[in-house]
Image: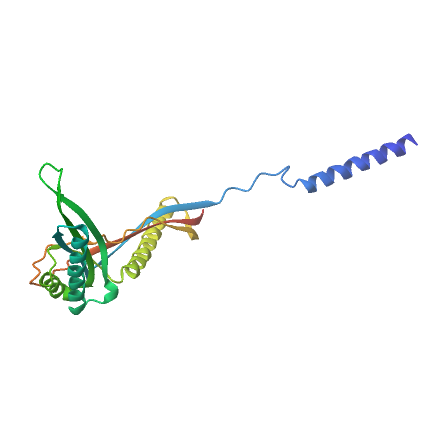
Length: 231
């Protein structure tokens, strides 16, 4: 009887050990080796020629009362806006960007002797029409001009081209790193867009009676790409 009980106890212990081994398969074998990856950054650029120009036209008027200064200024600003539109600028591209009113005082600053009102009209146009638009604004009464600010109408599309160039640059770098490390480059695991840079509108120097020279602008993009790699 004692011998039978000994066999039964041994069988139970063997069964429990087997179950424990199934429930914890990691016991008794090494963990999987970590996957190999290569992470690189890529940079891409696209050079383009600006085709748009924007200008700020300011109209300033003075009067003895604030109400009169604002009223006269509003009429003068409306005339400039209309002249710009008549020169070929779409109404959607003409915007009142700033209105201001300030008291004018005596030299000691104690007595108000009048008010100065100003309105700034921002107009966006093609570079080809820029000279005509500026001439029209000045003739209509604009007594302050800022610009041109040059830009590209399809900058978003050109930025996407720069992104493609950045990804291609990243692949070239990853391929070189894989070869140097004795690895085979695999597929893309992740792509993260970096801080892209659309061209900042550039203020060009121009004789408004002549054509504006657009020059060139550079659109930049950057990405971070992770590839799998095998030995």
